[in-house]
Structures are given as C-alpha cells and as structure tokens.
Length: 348
Image 1 (cartoon, rainbow, N blue to C red):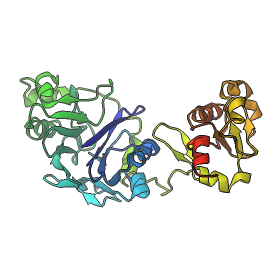
Image 2 (image 1 turned 180 degrees about the vertical axis):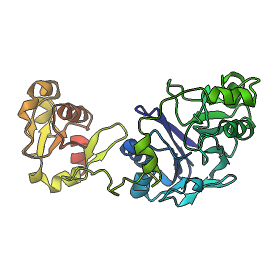
Image 3 (image 1 turned 30 degrees about the horizontal axis):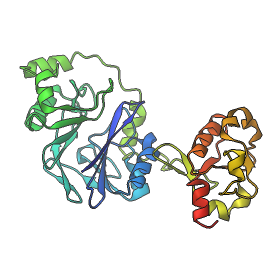
Image 4 (image 1 turned 120 degrees about the vertical axis):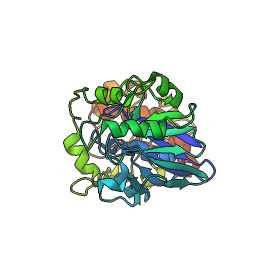
C-alpha cells in the first residue's frame, strides 16, 4: 500500500494518503482546507484515483479540505452522521468498511473527544488512524463539543488498545513533531491512560487540563458542518490568466503548448547563460535574457504588464527564478514546464 503522511504546520494537523498500488484507488484522511493545492498536486503527480476523503471527526482547529477535494476530483466525503453535517455522501458508522482497490479500512467508533469520532484500521491491523481520540503520549480534549472523558476512556481501551501491540498509531495532530507511535508504546507510556491508569485517573486528568479553546473554533466548526464548504459556496480562485498548476514541490507551472498558443499574452524570461541562450537548444523568439545568478539584482527589470513565463533548459533553474520573482512581488508568474528541452521535443 502506498502511504504518505503530510502536515499542516499552522494547526499541527496530520493528513494521510493511502492508495492501492495496483489500481491507484486512494483515500485521503483529515485534509486541511489551506493545504488543498499541495494535496491535489501529490494526488495528481502519483496518478491516484481518489475515491473518498475521510474526516475522523468534526474538527474545531482547522477547516476540512474535503469539500474542495470533492470539487476537484469527485471523491466522496466521509464523516459520522452523528454531527448532522451537510455535503456528507459517505456516512460512516462503527463496523463499516471502506474499500479502495484491494485495500480496506475498518471503521471503529471512538466517541469521547466528540460524539462522532472515528478511527480507521487497515485490513491487516498494522496501522490505525486515531484522529483526536488517542494522540502520541496524550488524548483528545473532552471539555467541549459534547466531549466526555469517561466515554473516551472506554473508546481507547476497547477500540484502540485491543489492537495488536505492534499496530502503528497515526494521530490527527502532534504539537511536538512526533509522527507515529504504536499501541504497545501508548499502553505502556501514555501518561494519561497508559500503564495501570484507571477510569478515575484518566477522567481526573482530562477534567483538569484547563486548555484555552482552539483559535479557529468559531470558523472551523460551522465550516466543517458543511463538509468544509465556505459559507458563500465559493472556492479559492485559481489564476485567471492561464492554466497554471502548483506542483507538490510548490512550483507554479504552465504547459508549453498553452504558452505557444498565447505567445502574445505573456512575457518570456530566459534565465540561462548567454552561451546557452544562443546554444544548441536555441531560445524562444521574443524572450528576454537575465541569467539566474543576476536575477535578484535585476528583478526590477521584469515588468508586470503581462504574466511572466520563466524559461531555462529543463525547468529547474526557472523554478527557482519564479520563487525569486514572487518574493519580489510578481504574482502572475509561472515556470515553463520542462523548459527548452520539452519545448524542442514538442516541435514548438
């Protein structure tokens, strides 16, 4: 199974991609609205067919990216129906099985942090995605959203700690950069519920944490009651001047075929050396030359009257050039995908 763990630094949220390597069918767990371009780029670059986005619960600290991903890929949105949220077309309950290709996830209800919390367990019980029910050396808070420490104690003990001790735990968050644990580790070392902790110990600990409410609470919960859809129903706007895509590496790129068909609508900036500009690959007619190692000092020469498409040999140096120009304040700028090598291969 293909597996990727991604992080949103601002909310310390972990997002997970799982895919069947033979069919490329995939699921996405706990996506973050602001990380949609990153997640969509990775799905595109890995040629995955996203069948579902799965939220472990109705988050209070970030807006889900599920609605955006459905809009982009047609994937279904999975969440517990106990929340009564809109836009949910895959209501998930304890005992359900989510199939993607030859892979399967088993749904376990883990109420306590919220009523509708779910954990997802792989078919071989080697991995569990615990959301906010069980964290690494911690557990999800129980002081709002119908939280109940006693329920959470039961959920962890009966639905997570009954898995094999070797089962790897992947939580919804970690605020100290820890990426994974195991059932055996948490049963032994978790300071809230590990070792010989009894219900009274856990409940007493959880009821006396005195945590401030999440900063995004007033925004996140209402949005997540719509599956992550903005209140006005409008998605973030993509660049309007051309079919620009953002790669998983964070590079803004545009296809050479489009550039050829719209030559008059863009400014072309070549960032190779003078020798390369006049060399075997040649250059695109009308392109301006500013070598990359001179670009920071000469960035003011690049005007913003037209969108700027940056060119090099294979698209690597020009990717750096787009980042330099964006820091200089240009917003309509993109890298020529594949550079002059690709341009020549296409016979342009």
